[in-house]
Length: 470
Image 1: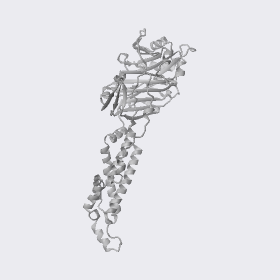
Image 2: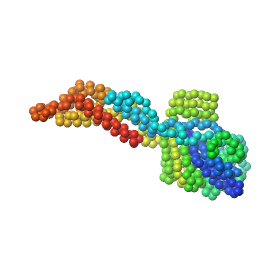
Image 3: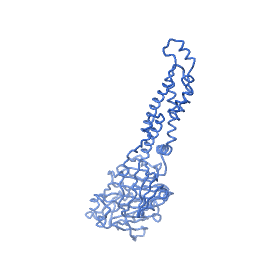
Image 4: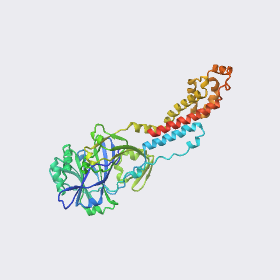
């Protein structure tokens, strides 16, 4: 599965004072969601553009490439649809929360910390609900075509002052002619990038504002920015994210935020990765809402998975779905975007560790409780009975009794008479014959006290280390 991703396209605006010359419109940010499943990618792309820069042009165009034939591209241009807000918590924060829960359960084996073990643990706040802008304004549709032999327009949609077309060009020159028909000439660096795509047989999605007044009147724009968006579906063997066209912004840094449903990693062998300030994280969401018009965007696996579903007239609320998604953030000068980005479905060692802690926390707790109990018993035995050559093997095995809580440890220790049977008895006779004022081994209570102090000290140290490293 995949989730919304920020696509790197290019936006240009035609200004009347410079006829037929395109000027780059500054994008405030780029956002997108990708849903990839079974070799098919669904992508909703949103780009936020400053309203004053946009209105200053008589025309504006937004172009981004598609690595698939135009006749295999599904275009679903919509306006004002409420897309699901993916919030939830970062997986690493949930893992840390689970580590704390394991610590409380483990420490409760000593009984006196038990009241704390039943206290609810509040997951760390990640701010994911506010971290990403929610796409409100998307494109909407009509019909039409462009009569040019070397350019084939497969789909055309118009609505709310916007027009969008999916097309294929046989040559870069024919694509330029197509753009000229829209009263637009691209800057030289934009031409070069488009030529690379044409030579690689990419299709294009091209959107432009064909009625500025109608677009400005759009009730779904807000504050000082306009949001453009388009939903695409196309076959691909890897998750695609167009990036190169953003290079036209030069040294400007356009924040890019991607969300990919399920876990994904960057595809190997991409030289561009070494130049980018790219970060990836993973989150889980438990509840979200899907507006009815957007059902087709999400896979049947996601829609049918929820344990609890509440249906409204135009939307469904889902809970207990436990959907994971990948968060990608890019903050680099646009001049470094020398290639597009590719992702594949996969995981990382860190994510696998976090998921193990989350999904198998009882096993995780036991794997820590056993060695800590053994070590505590051994250290306590050696510390308390060091004068009497304590049996290290016996104290190691005795530590397993702590799995029955400290009550079980006390019961087993008393039954086995650790202060007599776990030491060298000949050492007792030697001390009796000597003038030592304390010839006999210390009572078992000293061992119990030493065990619980050492156990808690090792537990706190171990869990603090885990919280810092996971």
